[in-house]
Image (tube, rainbow, N blue to C red):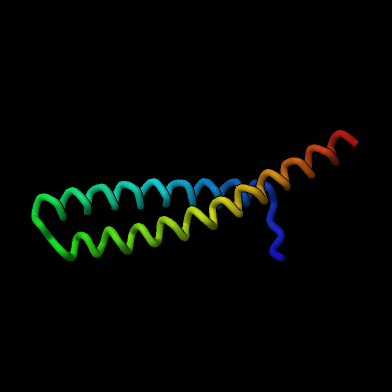
Length: 80
């Protein structure tokens, strides 16, 4: 298991959240372009972005849970 500091975990989660935002923006832009231009490649790009969004969101949830556990562990040991 990889061990990171809380700061590193928060930074990674922040970057992951930004990636999720860019993927959502990319999906919306490609979807609008695909509808306006009736472009099959744009719809395929939406599919690729959607799969990537699904995978990124799944990893973000795992990492966020680790961040919460690390913060709880850190708080318990600081109060002891």
